[in-house]
Image (cartoon, rainbow, N blue to C red; front, side, top):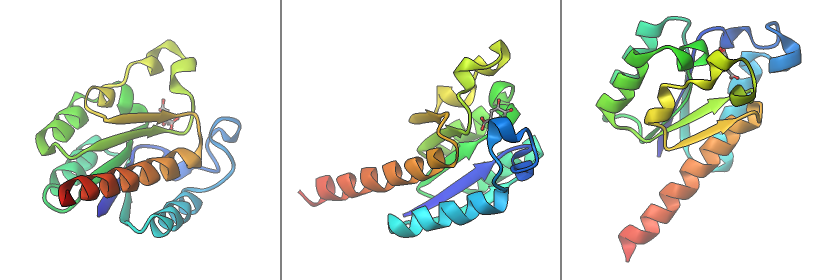
Length: 151
Ligand code: DQA
């Protein structure tokens, strides 16, 4: 079970950027926590981050045939990027959308999410725990599928 975790623009600035919203822990700390969650749930995980929309599209395209699930926080591209939505549709890899903050209860422009059109699940407002929860849900779903397949 291989999961690709993609973080979008400005998430490399965690700990520095608006700590009252995004917390005081760094991106490095997030990656460390995600790896610990993956170990706990016995899945393998790779974390990537980019500030560039095209690079995120390429990460998604390259995931085809290599990853069983994607966890994505597209940052501000959540609200603008049809290209990221189309890439996720193209590869059809089960996708979990995660946001650190409660995007639905912030500015109006954050209420639109293109990724939501394709995401199996959307986890918002839980901070770093949202990523850990996504990994746990993917692992449990996989185990349930294995049981069904063995019947
Ligand atoms: C975010 C919310 C977005 O609106 C914002 O542009 C981000 C982070 C979040 O994790 O809460 O960069 O995706």
